Length: 256
Length: 323
Image (cartoon, rainbow over all chains, first blue to last red; front, side, top):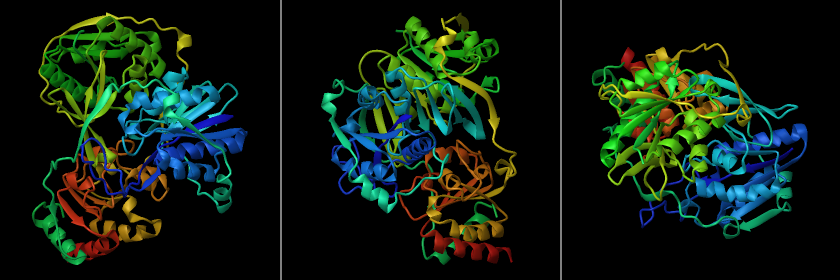
């Protein structure tokens, strides 16, 4: 099975977020970056499928030069090779624009399966995989926790709301978006890290892939959320704060 | 062009709460843009649902009916709505932001060269649509550019459904052309994983933990506080993904919805998926080391600090207060 895993580098979850001078995006200087969480689960699912059924795992990402370490991380965990769409202004594209770039890179590869994380931790749109399927003319299923290969294609376990699940049968080639928690994530081994250095990373300039169409969904400005609830912050040492809180819960909120 | 169209989803045969909220958002948008607000229901038997929707103040209600829409599939719903859009030429198509909508609305939008502006929390003049970035740490305003319908999905709880005006809209039937071969996925009946042994929904006091606890070895510390409070333990998704607590203790959109008198969020940053699950809590306390954590937005009381120091102090203070 040839599997392409579309991954994204996102700001580290503990990163201090500041807005840039134009008020149009985050100030990216000094940000720490990491592999998007549900993409890590998509990669894990791909690696386990390869271990069971053989084949090849190719990671695909779009971004500027800084995505290099995230690609190496995926290769160190066991992906066979990588495609890097070199693109500086990813945040200026909408979900359709990003998926167009990825689709153009996926098409000539003719994979059996395309996996991606359910959503990115930065934009949180959760659309890339679904649009990718449409652009590639493939069936898809989203929020997938488990993938079984069958004679005719795949049976996947899809998460529904409020603790419900559903099995879905679909033919391959197909696109799946993977929910976190279906597998246990592996760490890269020292051997894996060493091997990753020699694996192929093909760089495709974005300008060669898709026509530069302006976004339909245009990001106008980024702001800090306004506080909706007045939170009473309890200052002091842990002991003082704890005592003050218990006092408040008992006599003000009357919930103790 | 013919106005704002809201796509209704059912829950157990009735219009879902999120769909009513999407109607409220659609009406607000219609008023801002001087357009009519309409609604559409889809399925194999849509009469009761259409009648329920038509009892609110809307211009038109269309029921798209086809045997192949009996069970939801992305292919079926996309084909059906694509044909309705070709016929009605809406300016805006508004969805509730549910798992089902996330599965097909981006596909439908892409088919028409559009990009869904998803999970919006507000609509302002322009119109400008607000959605959250960075798990609620930033707000972003989007506008729709170009021709063709603008696709929007509305975050649960962002618009009030209580004030919808009653009405009696006309209901019409729309029969799409769908061939069995066009539906490529075969869904099973839905099922629940296992017998639930904890009913967090009924618990009066809940201590919720998130990534901030760092290590499963710190669980006994939290358990001691929960014991002192007589509280159940719950968690945000990553804790259950790691297997540190059973999946049935997960609080949020993919887990349980809670409504306790007291909810203590310990080391939980407050991603929207978690916040929608705790909305019914009477009193929320947040303990976090990050002053910018969105959980503080939702909390009545907050303590900024290290869990490892605050939790033991809290356990002692609770015990002392009970003596």
